[in-house]
Length: 85
Image (cartoon, rainbow, N blue to C red):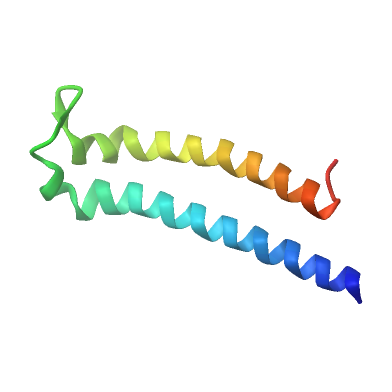
């Protein structure tokens, strides 16, 4: 019974991490790149406005950072639950 409880805790933490990562990526790509673009147009980054930068570069860079953060957090989670490779 304790094993099933441990499995449920592991998967709940995994799903929570995935959900947080997707929300961050959604905010960076759709929120900053599309919905909030008019409000970000006055802020300059690299010769263009911040909204355009998020639409073209920022969301990709946020996604890459999320990949590495997710991998590091999953390794930590795996060690905590004894399922590391």
